[in-house]
Length: 67
Image 1: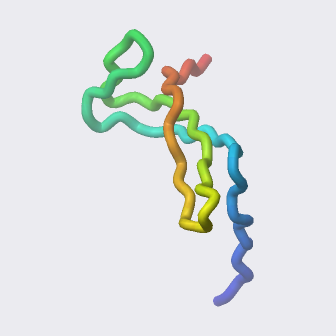
Image 2: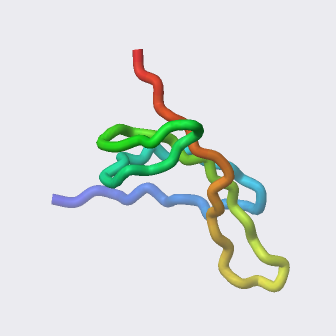
Image 3: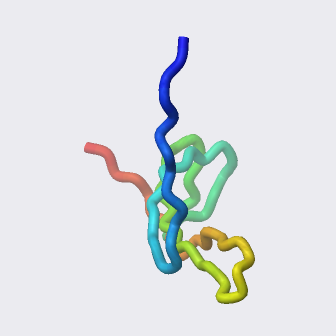
């Protein structure tokens, strides 16, 4: 069996993403300690000017609210 892979474009400087993460250990999120629940991490991509590889840096965490 075979299938084509989706090509993932490289992130550009300043792009943002949101990741849903599961707290296996107690984690500080906003004014809460989250344990055995999902929470969201908002990240921004930084790319240095000298051509070195970039990195994703966390700038906020939010508690997931599901209705």
